[in-house]
Image (cartoon, rainbow, N blue to C red):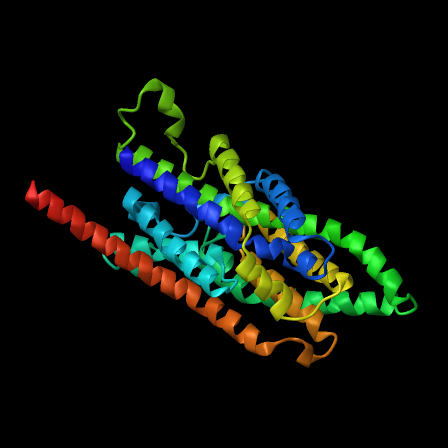
Length: 361
C-alpha cells in the first residue's frame, strides 16, 4: 500500500514536470510574437490545459491497457517507468531541448515491463485489436504516429501559411499584425486545450495501471472502507478522481513555466510574426485534438515543433535554424530508447534489491 502512494507521488511529479516542460508547446509562439507577455501567456495556457485535461480519457485508456501485457506490470514496474521518464524530462529541460514527455513515459513503461518479465519481448503489444475492433499496440498508437504526426505538422503548417499569404497579400503588414495579434489568442488557447487533452491523459493512464495492478495483486485487499475508491476491477476504466487530480497537477506545472524550452521553441528556431504563430498553433492543435479523440498518444513537442518549421520554411528554407532543429531531432530519436533502457535498468535494480531484502530476512 505504501508503494502505491510512492507511485502516485511519482506520477503526479511527472505530470507537474510535464506541465512546465511542455509549457513551451502551448505558449512559445504567442510569447515570441509578443502577443502576450510570458506571465499572462502561462496563465492562459494553464487554464486551457486544465479544460483540455478534463475533456476525455481515450489516450489514458491506451496507456493503461494497450501497450504492454498487464501480467508483466507490478507496482514497482510503474514506479521505475515514471522515474525513467522524470530523469529524461529533467535532463532535456536542463539542456533546453523540447523532447517528448509522452515518449519518455512510453519508453520507460516498455523497458520496465520487459525487465519485470525477464527480458521477454513478447509482453510488448506490438499490434492488436480491442473488443470493439479498434487497433491497439505500439505500432498503430506510438511508432507510426511518431513519424507521421511530425510530417503532417510540417506540411500542414506550410500549407496553412501559404494559404494565409495568398489570402492576405493585399493587406498591409500593420493590419495583418492587428488581426492575427487577436486571432493568436484563440489559437494559443486551442493549443493549450489540445495539449491538455493529450498529454495529461498519459499520467491518468499510468495511475490507472497502478490501481489495477494493486487491485489484482491483492495489495488493496485490506483497504478500509473509506479507501475503496482505489480498487479498479475492470481494466482500462479511468476513475474521475484520477482525471481531476491529473488535470489540476498539469495546470499547476504549466503555471510554473519552462523558460529554457520557450527560448528554443519561440526564438531560436525561426523568427515569427503573429500570423506565423497563428498558423503553427492552429495546425498543431488540430492534429493533437484529432489524435486525442482517437486515443493516440502523440508527442505535442513533435507536432508543434514541425508546425513551426513548416511555417518558417514558407519564408525561405534558410529562415529555419537547422542547427537547432538537428539538436531537437536527436532528442526525439533518443527519447524512447534511452528511457526504455533506464526503465529496464531501474527495474532490474529494484528486483535485485527485493531479492536481497528477502534473503536477509
